[in-house]
Length: 513
Image (cartoon, rainbow, N blue to C red; front, side, top):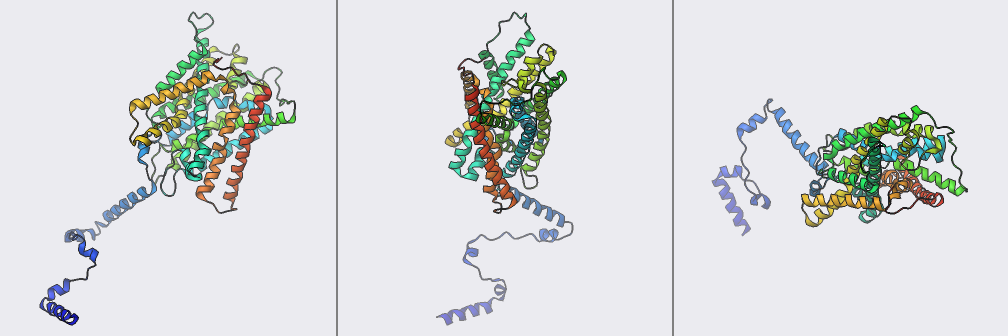
């Protein structure tokens, strides 16, 4: 039978030699596939000419670039629905505005309080060390924003979950991030509302016939204004607000330390650290001072979110523009914080008021020998900066609230619901500000809780994700800084609690003053 088949094939081959020359052996997959469209001879000849070779190379480069972009950045469809990543049109300038608005604020005004317990030498050493340390961890976070697989970690919590696992990441990062964002917004209501009250009293004067509002009512005025500004849709859309906040922050910091240094030191000023009744008390006071310094650099929970507003591709990854914006912003921050801390301590020594620090010192010691215009302008700048900072610190809370809806419904949050959620958060922050008005005196405690977010977790996440060689310099450096950051956090929280117990604090509920 096989011999007959072979004989028939030979005969057919001899009968049609043309078919023999064009017949090939096909695999089953090739037989089933559709016939290919024949290429144009003109196109083939044209693409082989010297004139077409640059065009051909350009098409190949574009195709490779698009493939590289697709590999480099993998986007989650929900990112387009959430306020942090809804718009990715940011740049280095916008990043600098956001960082300046959030990095300079009321926490800078209490920096001289840290010097009262640390003294000149250790105060400057700790301030410089904390500045360089947080600048290094800032660089780590910027590098970790884009993973090698193309996923962008546009939220601090998402990066923590990617590094430590979903459960452990939420356990370690969720509470400090939400506490830092929400607690900062509550404190901004207290400081902004209280400063509006002072501004009104200065402008209206002693012979004012208008009925003054109470502190709670001024809190309400500030909160309503903040809620109105919070209706801007996303983080990228508040870049103009952050620019105004950055300008006002730099302006009032400069005004306060310049006026304080021009007026000179107070009579009988003292720089000797206060001695506690025991060694434990003195040690814990030093820990509380370290917490105040850590609280001054609390903006790391916003870095990844700011970087998430930037476009990114293989040619221009977002980390380049982000680092440029950060370097410019932190240069300005250093020029504001260091003169404020050192000049404030030089002018007032241990007489720095614990409530609002330098701002209270300006009102207390120079209200009568300084132009009312300067004091009123300083107060107005603090209010505007507080309103601007409220927007950026509230954005992670808004994003977290809206993500609950988008995950459940798998669609964008409606406009009316977005407005309701932001109004609800503003009202809740106002309630906490009125119910617990003593929270702004807990800067050391808040700094201790937020310290791992700034100084410890980025080092651990770098080791977990990048996996440097064991016992290498990189590995040892990050493990050392991470462990030291956790130890400092425990010491600072303990010292803050001890200081509250030993020195006492006025717990007045529902009675803001």
